[in-house]
Image 1 (tube, chains in turn green, orange):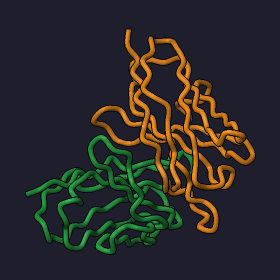
Image 2 (cartoon, helix red, strand yellow):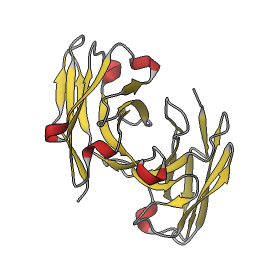
Image 3 (cartoon, rainbow over the protein chains, first blue to last red):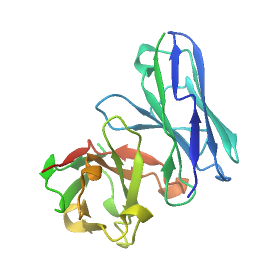
Length: 107
Length: 122
């Protein structure tokens, strides 16, 4: 199975900050790396797919980068609605696996 | 609009089975795979398995093999997950989710159901 390691596991930031979350895979993903946002009591929502493609309807302050095994989610200019938990996930090979999550809260 | 609507909460005893349904609407049901993901309280996301509504082909994570069955009824655009031999470790929210698929050739999960809480307790 492909192991996904996210860092940090938690992060405190302020409105307007630029934040970065990283995700490392145990093997090359051929860019099949996705990012999700989850708010308490809600289903996850897809933000980024294919490492860099912004899902329709997602604000442009979210961006993804990286390749092979190392990937990054960047939020440029944090908004109040961005405080949530973020997960990376690989869709390169089953079993599809998720990172352990990064909880982003208000500083 | 495109949506997945799941069946309601379930409470089961250890050793029992549970069947969760996932009704799709707003798109061509057979054009996108359905995956199932679960989340225990306060924990992360865990992929359970997938099914092609078109072919009926399925697959699951090794830990669930022999215990989980995925089926569908294309006439009512509904997918099902049946999990047997329940233990307290199976207590979680179960989500059905659609694979992006199509021209993107990517199984990213672009549409999610609202989740079904399954509680296993004596």
